[in-house]
Amino acid sequence: VITEGTGWRARVLHFEVGGKTGTTDEQRDAWFLGFSSKYTVGVWVGYDDFLPLGPYETGSRAAVPVWVRVMNYLAVKEKPGPLPVPPGVVFVRIDRRTGLRARGDGVFQAYVEGTEPAEYVDEKKDTQEEDLFKEEFNMFR
Image 1: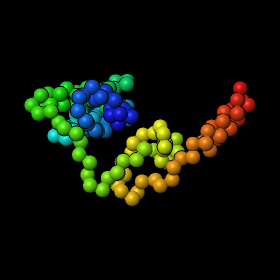
Image 2 (image 1 turned 90 degrees about the horizontal axis):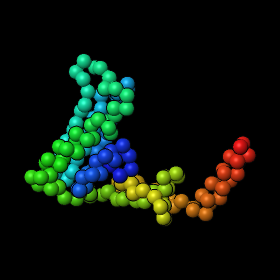
Image 3 (image 1 turned 135 degrees about the vertical axis):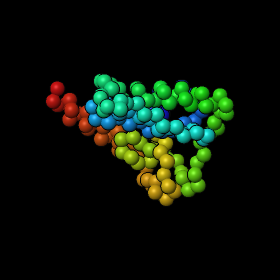
Image 4 (image 1 turned 120 degrees about the horizontal axis):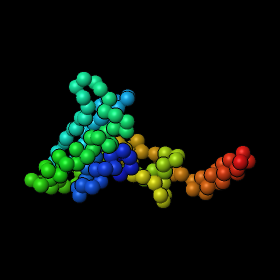
């Protein structure tokens, strides 16, 4: 969620981190659970009496900034290093639209070795399908 999603506010840190944001219905609770190679920290934002936090108060907006401050404070003592990759985990570049392996643009996803997609996206076929969709869409304009 740091590089591609709701945890983007944590990108200000100058070391590798990962985590997960969360928000309950009606913005009653917001949280961020995150980690570096040295620390794991959770931040919860909410009221004890179950009142809503207010509109737009999500884990990303309410909890991540607090988490970043805590992690910056901890990093002064000892800056975390790169995140370790567990044995048996592989990273594969994936096409966002199809979920198949990408040869060019795509995002890296982690898989337990042997469970990663084997099939590559056919970029020429993909382009033809997109062109067909655009033609169909333009019919309704």
